[in-house]
Length: 281
Image 1 (cartoon, rainbow, N blue to C red):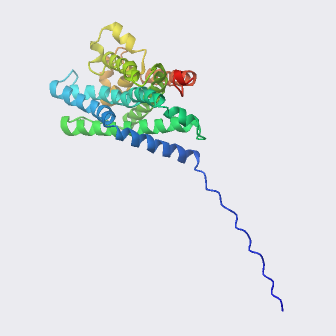
Image 2: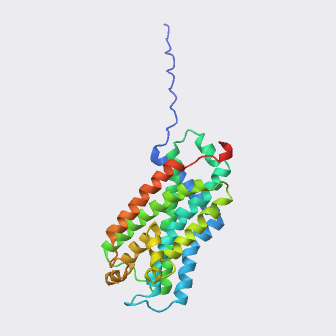
Image 3: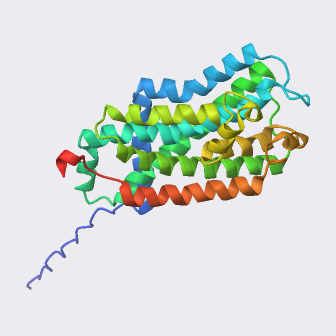
């Protein structure tokens, strides 16, 4: 009796499962956050600057600016706004030219990874660091200077959409302005003066209505002023809106201007962003 042996059926090789779009973006985001945290200078400046400034301002100005509003309550709005601008506009405007100059962007472009994943990683980093920075700033102000947090769901909602629109506009503008820097060293020289001027004219370091009228009008062309104004609607009494230049907090106009800047920033990104330096072609 002959026994027939069946040939072994070959097992089909299972190809490695490729990560989906969301997983790719999260991986890139984790990488960007890790790189950010490894740079001590960036961490200290980005996370520490708003906290140091609120400590200085709250220690020097311990009175009220009228209507029972303390200086801390007023200036916390500018510190949150400038913190979000620093982590998005200033941070990206300085670091992207460094990555471009070192050839990092050129190597990314040569990989099969979709280009949008790199941008998604930057956005995830900005959002994560921005949230951490804001929470830390509020915690310090509440613990040391008796800051009154928003007391209604409506104010927290306003806080949310103003922050989201503001950080989106600043992120897109930061990516766009990074193309102006010809070398890694010139990134800081291009971005830092712009950021400082906007902070001084937008009501971050001074009561906005105390500034010269022409300065208020110039500030109104840029998103930081509207971020500060939107946040004042969150942290200050509703009656304080009458002291604003427009006679109210003008939240509708805040939303329109910030959305407009999101569109402008996106157009500038799409038309000006470069993956390589001019010498690389």
